[in-house]
Image 1: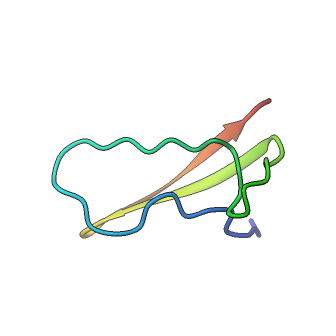
Image 2: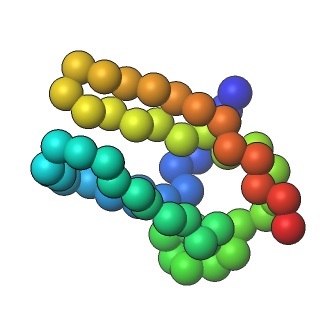
Image 3: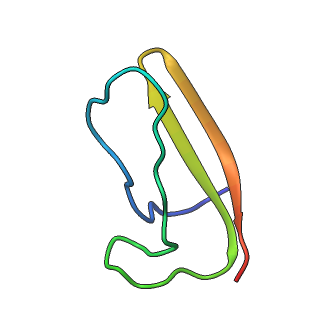
Length: 57
């Protein structure tokens, strides 16, 4: 898959525990993005996960 970075939702340190990040389907300029499949990545210490997100409008 080839793609581009759309937006960084959070970058930095966080305390241990559960956290929630909401994405309002906009890019880093604030414009709405198209429906489609998006890939997101989560990194924490030695943990990494990449998942698919399907955006349907």
